[in-house]
Length: 408
Ligand code: FRU
Image (cartoon, rainbow, N blue to C red; front, side):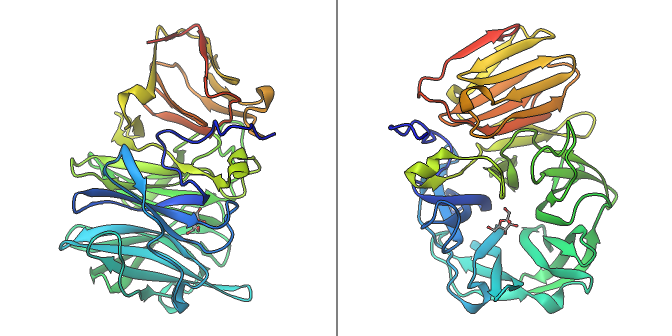
């Protein structure tokens, strides 16, 4: 049932007023503004119709405004969608790399396209820089989501599926961003048929390959969603085991960028394709939003920590944390006991089909929750474990009650 008033419009999460949003794209700071582009279908809140890059921009990451759809599928090379990609600021110009999707009666091809801008709002000519002949011979047409960075050399990672249905990440280099050569593929057996939205980052000397693998078997504590999202620690160039970035219902396709202060900031899509859950915001003509920014660091064991990077008033902190506690946020129930942290959204249909997500946690040493009108982001133990989810309280007055733990 749709409530008569729209309680679910997010107050501080980037969310378009209408249409469908998915992956964050092209995160950057350019000429005094933060730019957060995103996959956008303006005319259909279920993702149909024209798919291009929507745009939020602002002087602060906490105050972004919607600026339309500057990258549209208006050429032969991207006629069925301007799909995900990234941005690099180089010589005062914004270089934007994305995947042009082309669908010839069910036969798809993927072009990696470069376009540039001198103001972050208007983009120039599009040039295909990689297409089918440039991919290794064992790779299918599923090659997409260029994440590019520059450090004297240009680097690009691309998500891919090989002909034996293994997910892989392709790595290219260039001296000139229009001329790329293939260097190697990253692969670890046992992680599904397709790896989407890769990213490669270094924090404090630790190197990570992030990606979103599809086709993992669901387990009680791992890979609980239809698709997954995590990172491999790179030991040399070899990926270790996949560590999940999130244990909630709604986190996919995260992307990072380095802020002017030198922080590695991650923003994700609070949603996922083919999720079997409802988002009743569709009753108001819109679906999905982005997460708050999260500042990444690395703990002493070499795992990524995510810290909420938002205005202080948005963060609920807890203290006096005992070995067994429950927190009720409206009808969302969070609980911890005997090494299991549970997010339960079954009460009064608050999760609209979302039921229970679990994470293994030895001891809860710290807990922060960022709660907006229709989302929860739960940061356990300095963000070593994170749970991100939409939820749909009936009223805009969300009550919080605690047992075995205290709100600070
Ligand atoms: C991930 C994804 C990307 C693709 C985009 C299309 O959610 O499937 O791989 O580029 O969405 O919108």
